[in-house]
Length: 248
Image 1 (cartoon, rainbow, N blue to C red):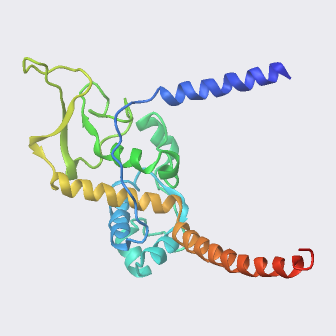
Image 2 (image 1 turned 180 degrees about the vertical axis):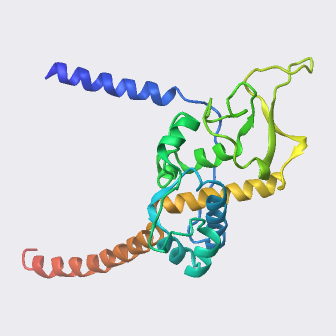
């Protein structure tokens, strides 16, 4: 028994060590809103255009997304589904071959259906906005919250090329931590920083919805349940008083 307890404690300690061993870059906090259909529609557009070629959301269906986001089926298939053989009821899987993906990237790109729940919305939002140029990396970029990231910066045309600028007390550049990410003036993206931040919020909002598409209905149902319990409590108290009035 003691040996089993010791092993469990050791496992817990190991988990804490690995959890604390990641990047300590401060995360930007956001509040996603699944009721904002316009934001979700824009997020779906960014996801399909910039992410779906490599990543799938294979626990979602095109039909469910179209219905929840208020997108007509014909517009969904025409503008947001690039696999012309796909049907509206199909799962949103990527067409990339896993073997080829592993050869290109070293590992097959993960499915993103649950990434917002696994990593957290703040992590995902910060990750999408903190790619920066790093000539030492195979794809020429690195990331502040995911060190030595193994994917290219597919959103570079929107954001531009960010530089990891670190200035010492004498004004010289260095490679120290605590640097500032600045878009290279000569390699700007098609969006302003504020526009890009909004776009990444929309994309994060969509991935948050994909991770929990029933969230709005669940919260609404929870309200009904609480109201039912409140009404039931009134009748329960009246019934208790009726049964116990003879005892007192």
